[in-house]
Length: 74
Image 1: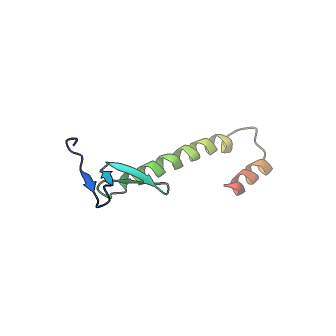
Image 2: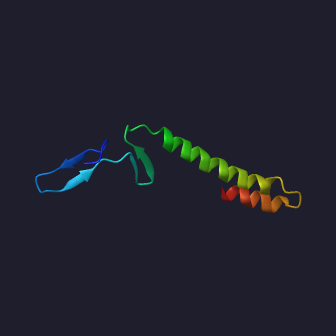
Image 3: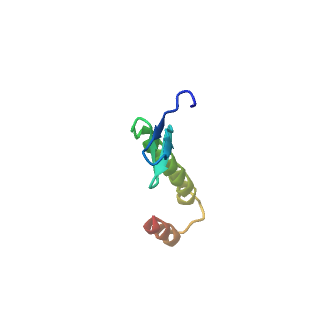
C-alpha cells in the first residue's frame, strides 16, 4: 500500500483508492469538501471572458449596431 493513500476493500473484492480530488458533473471536488478551488476556477474563467469581450467594446471601429448585437448575445 502506498504511504498516505488509503485503500477501501469491499466484500466483492473491489478496491477503491483514495484520491486528493476529482471533477464530478463539471464541479471540482477536493478531499476536504471545500469548494474554494472551484470558486477560484470559475472567477478565473469569467475574467478571461470579460477581458476578451473588452477588446470588442473598446475597439474604435465598431459601430453601434454591432456593439448592441454583441451585448445582447452575452
